[in-house]
Image (cartoon, rainbow, N blue to C red; front, side, top):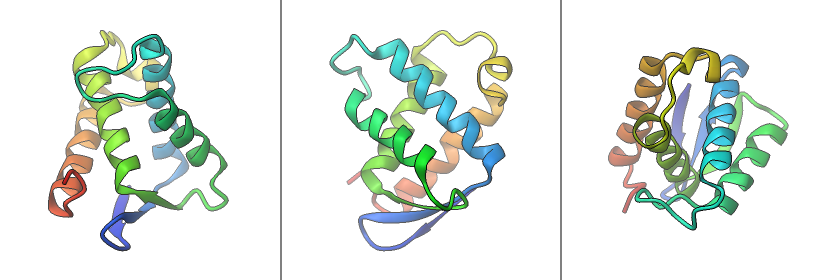
Length: 120
């Protein structure tokens, strides 16, 4: 998985199906777990997550997905919830990705966002 900056507002996400599947599962789990809360401490919003799931699932070329900084932030917020907010016991069975893999994904997204001003 790799982000390539397109401009100040978006990036190109290059991702394999094996990498995309756990991300979609993570987004769906946080959506179900947090659907009755208006927002959490990380600023989770249901509609944004629903739209991101739909975008990722319906992308014509799943290996190259144009994604906005706001969507990258939403993904980061969902990862924070999965890692620190929701009590996930078995990451492998839930997402086909270890806790360490989810942590590494979070760190990669956080690094990209920090380096490219996505959180500003």
